[in-house]
Length: 344
Picture 1 (tube, rainbow, N blue to C red):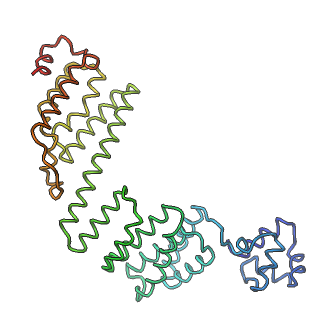
Picture 2 (tube, rainbow, N blue to C red):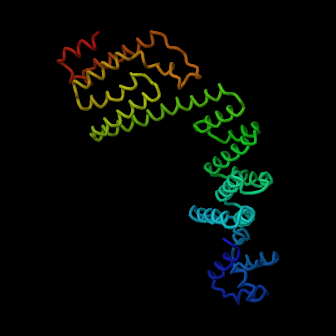
């Protein structure tokens, strides 16, 4: 909010007219009117008296602590975009400087303004784009130290991208520390950094780690969703989700076992004897495919420990013990084919 708007707002709140305010400050009524209309600003020596008269702090008067809403920030960014088209980069840059002086603590606005200017200069909309490096990066740094982790993340993202383009890899790496180790984007950025440095093997390894990790995240999500559908007795949706889970395993080369496994809970919930037999037969037949991902080109740069045969046999025995549990699979009792399958 412009200082004139602040003056107008608080003057009205305490019930003063422009004339009364002018008399108390020893200025003319037109002077107060010009402040409030944004045509001029009060002299610096009047700021403290104005704040005392309006019963507000200097910070409030100068809008130092004012927060902008997301909608207000959006309006300013749209206004900025319009200015680029109508007035060009230089004038828009000057307008942006003024806006940030007006809202020096609004780091979300500061970051978005910096991104807009950064993007426009990269597309060749201004002469000598490098002359803006210092100011734009200073704005990113301001946003980087905001208490809001989202704003920090955005600013670190922008600074990482800037230094990566400049081939200043040490500085690019510095800003990766602002990303959580649990954020998959951190690994992707490490991959980008390795790639730009010519460390191709390391880049592939990092990207493949992201794929491997995200597969398991998605698989867990599908599993929980399937379980929820079964709890709601929505068999149709559960089957749909189980099919998607199997397809996901196929896309990520996780082996035939994982492609079939998700459907087991569905056929058990249905007490579908034929379906249960077919799924269990597939699982037992494909236990040794559990580690097929190690052979996939998707993960060829990752290092895995090869399991020995006893590991696979142990998994198979545990499966058979589970399938022999009458509480879970009692509905299969009386099927000679089933008895033969689980008692091999």
